Length: 366
Image: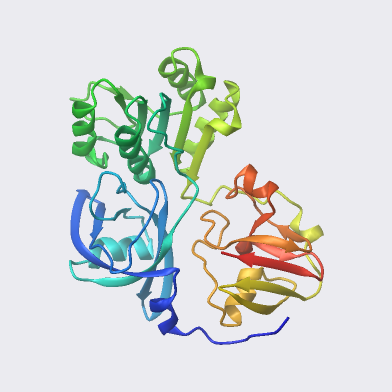
């Protein structure tokens, strides 16, 4: 084992296999507070799956800022990759992307990652039920287009919650899909503050309404459907509680969360957290790093402090950009919601919320 301590080389971003340079081809207005950024095809092919996301690396106020955004494009239907960004009040990056992006702008992104993806089979005949609220539609829209193109025998029921008609992202595109695939897709809009001319469903999706919708859309047989869900925390909780009430098998449920504000650590991290610093061996990009992790810091925080070019984005246990496999030792992980049951069983951890429980921790990243 050998030790490497080095400052982050900015030129490494351009040359690393994990990073791409994307050029804005077009900025398309979706709603008053939402833009789609369509990118030119990069020189190095950008391979992605429907439902995955990009981590943008932006120089804002002379600081490097990272944020993850789902690809709203589908690799099977769209020539150019795209992300869709809804403005968030006081959101530094979302406001920057809505106010300042112009065709020709160039910035760095991390390679597409994420496990919120469908397992597509052109011979399958599946029934999908998808739920989204607000900007939660972005990965779901990518998945919806992929299913309709790549699984001609499958059908989709899509429930989409918004405030009013003006805030329905991709409204025109959704109408086109309903027309083109009339026998295979049904889109149910639910508005919490509809206008006077609205004839569709209104209200907010709570547990009772979600349960009713699932039962109706599944034809009384909900356990055989495939579910995809993305949106704000309260919305997510309501739909997930409905899944529990209907005894939907866990393997049928696929969820993506953009928000961490209502999550709570699952473990008693105060009791289990290390009281002293420990050395963690990190295997990254074919090199070995010895990272001294202070008692109150995560593995990711310590690695970044030492200038190691560690992949990361949200730093809250949601995006999985910093995911690694625990090869040896034990860690305390504050929250494992970002990992699938299969990933947990295989020993994966999220370095942004993990601290070494003792000596001898070895983590393989990538």
